[in-house]
Image 1 (spheres, rainbow, N blue to C red):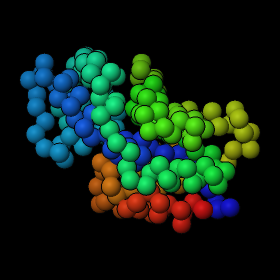
Image 2: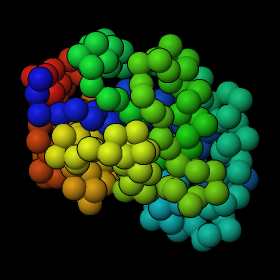
Image 3: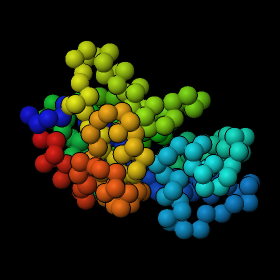
Length: 220
């Protein structure tokens, strides 16, 4: 058995290519504001951090505008956009292999938890994960560190011997890296997601992999 007992997976850009659904719902939600995102790279800026953060940073939205956007976004995302995604090649094989190895696995995402459950269910992976932990719809749990702290609480309720030294977060953006650092756990980056390799390299990631199965060398 390797060092890690608890494997925490980001969802968007790490397990699933959710670009189509997210980008279409962004367009839908921005239309009443008269705003149009033009490039793939600009769309990706909104894929990772909570919308309340990215809307303020990149579009200058105030609190009310952000809440109006989120309401419109969910109007399309919940019934349609959540299903406009595909699992990344080899991601399913990786999580199944770690499951067979007896490791605890959880999805930890800034996406609302109910939406994360829909996506994991679409891929037939619900039974592979011990938990799916995400943001709350009211924004009380929103950032990566808040999600991670909630997941730690859930693990400790089941396993009083939980040790952060045995946990690792796998993600694709600088926000995942920063969240893991704040949480005091190791981080491994994936290069194929919505972040950039440059950001992951600068983040001090334990490793950066081009394929989920490469994580075996780190985790097993």
